[in-house]
Image 1 (cartoon, each protein chain N blue to C red):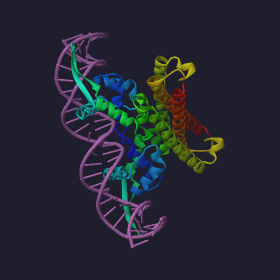
Image 2 (spheres, each protein chain N blue to C red):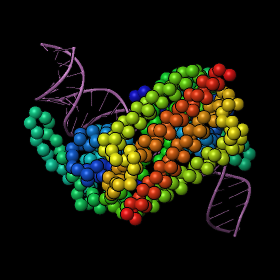
Image 3 (cartoon, each protein chain N blue to C red):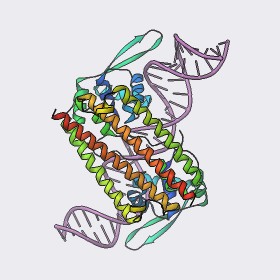
Image 4 (tube, chains in turn green, purple, blue, orange):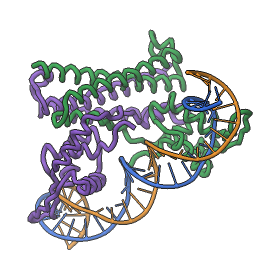
Length: 190
Length: 190
DNA sequence: CATATCTATGCAACGAGTTGCACTGCACCT
DNA sequence: AGGTGCAGTGCAACTCGTTGCATAGATATG
């Protein structure tokens, strides 16, 4: 084991940017940091409680009119220390875990045409994600279209680079699907 | 939920290619199918037992001299049916889950130089994996260097395409690391 | 008017994956 | 003689992640 508990630290990063409730964090994860570390509201609630017990965050109950009360969390000094500590230690490299690869590997033991359709479906899904990332890039980093990251610094630069990772991963996935589709089709016509 | 229990099916694919013990399967996973669906021997033993109970595989105790007995598993007709069924149903698209993205996103809250070193380390790791995949490609698909997958068919073609997915993913990862390293270094000298 | 969706938190149960350990016996290296 | 590594199976305990459900008022949609 090299590094662990990344969800805690993903939450610390997000809460440091600005305080928020569990629910708000879950929405944020859906839209940004969750592209690199997906999490459901259940996970987030449980981990927030654990972090509260550990003293990494504190919460304030906030009453709202017309809406349920919420607990707004913010990072404590101990949480900041923990985040800094974690940032300096190694994490495990990402591992690929893709059921589509398993299916493709076993394709000849079943309905090859169905597997091909599945690859096409995945291509569409990844292509959609790619467009979402590109939309975020156009909205948040409009100048990067021409000049890349030359003008960006600090937190903004890092956010841009993370997004670039998402774009590259999805581009690569789509290109792989295209290669698979092309090869399987032309095999069928040989 | 779209599709689940991919480990069972990864094992069915592998056992269909040829029968083997839990230990042998664990070794195979380390060298091939595990690049797309990693699993430890513990997981494999537990799942094999479950599959045995479900009637998807059968086992034979094999005595060996100088070595412990082993249980050699093979796929039963019910297992073949299950595999065919699963191959025709959809699986969830792969999700990216990379702690390095979280770190990079939070880099400005800690030691930026340490995060940069971590990116360099990951670059090296992914580069190593890439070389492993390329080695397998040269060994198992030597003709693909020039002509791509034109000559391949059926199971061989699918294995080649899966390997291509691994190569593409690692290439893309290494390229991303290079982009990050370059951007962080040139930010430091601005 | 009824149904769905959003905000907001949470429990309970399960399945998936990880880590550490235990036992046996052979082969190899120093 | 002692340590490491490989082959082989397995238990126990744990964390991580998913799914289904419950509650509750507000607001939107048919």
